[in-house]
Image 1 (tube, one colour):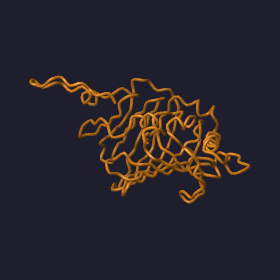
Image 2: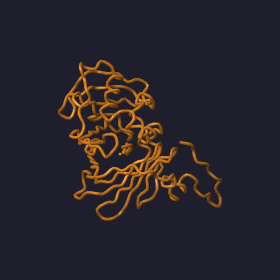
Image 3: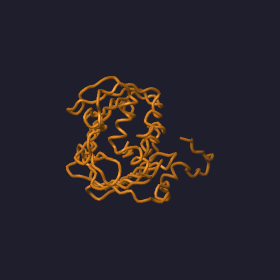
Image 4: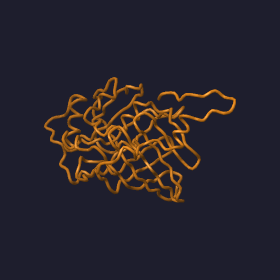
Length: 260
């Protein structure tokens, strides 16, 4: 979820929604993105989402049992909590300036992923202004993705990563994307979005699978709600704040956190 994820930034089966009306093949990236907004339910439906809570399950390669997750998002912020089969919990979040993760092993500040990439994942309205996150984005043609013909948008993000997006020609919905991994020495990451459904809001992909190298992870949404969430929910955990502002040792100068 970049789910983030996440951002987890964070879709519904087309069984409840008619495909976007399309009289002729689309010729520009702008036309494909406008068609996508309509397929989701229109700009009004997208703008109506100010907060959301998602609950579901996670399947990861190398794990025999599923984990459960709960994802909270409010414009510009998110919090993801995953409970493993053994009962242990890992979490990650973004409160507008710091991307972090927390596990039984301790807290980590994420400095590998560009902060603009995290902000995009936390932007609940990014479908309305997708091009703001790209230096350039162009229609490269129609190609097969996940077994269906898709409009292929190709570009470079504002943080310098090459990427592609694939929009289903029939429905107008985002079928998936492919982008350069932020992992050191990593290759491409491919994400597939399936089973779009409506939960009294814009269509949402309820099955999201990420492939990176030999790793695969699938988030399956079981419920999505839009009740308002308090800002306090997204505050940095104490262990993360301690990473940002470590206490100086008896013989060491005070260190200042570097702005992300």
